[in-house]
Length: 72
Length: 131
Image (tube, rainbow over all chains, first blue to last red; front, side, top):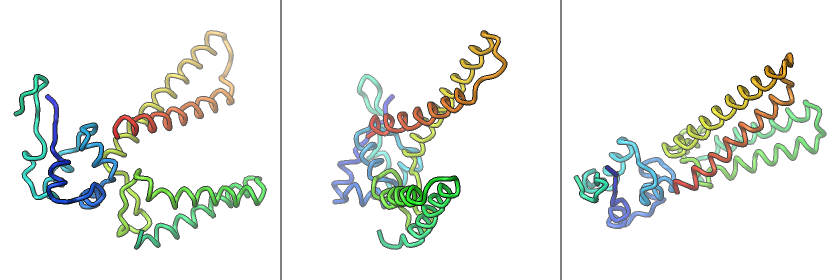
């Protein structure tokens, strides 16, 4: 199983820059970049903070995908 | 960077402290000034390089590692520790096999330098891999 995300799309929908979103959740811009590129898996706490900052349910931003490609 | 006065003042004092420490340790005054300037230069740069999240409301501890930075730091420290322990074990076995009484201090200093190098190289590579 792999954690995928639509953080970039969600952020752009809210017209937020990576810098702004980073300061809203108290992390560096590099961390937002790493999450958007799916090179870093955030903790549950950070994922919840991101969903709160973007005012979107966490399931709309993050999803589990099986190695065969199906989502759950 | 507004509201960072406490951070900058504390780091200026710390930089002067570094410089004084070097002078008291036998370095010439200009080396002390150079060390203080380099240290303060780093502290000026630190809030801008994206390595730390900036929280001006926290005063002197305005720079914090976020969870990605903390994870990278933990991994780099672990790598350095493991390499140091393996090197110490290797050196001890080598000296034991040669029936030497003790390991020279210079070798142990070399292992410390190796540990520091492993830490910084790991940190650099992990940051590159996750950005």
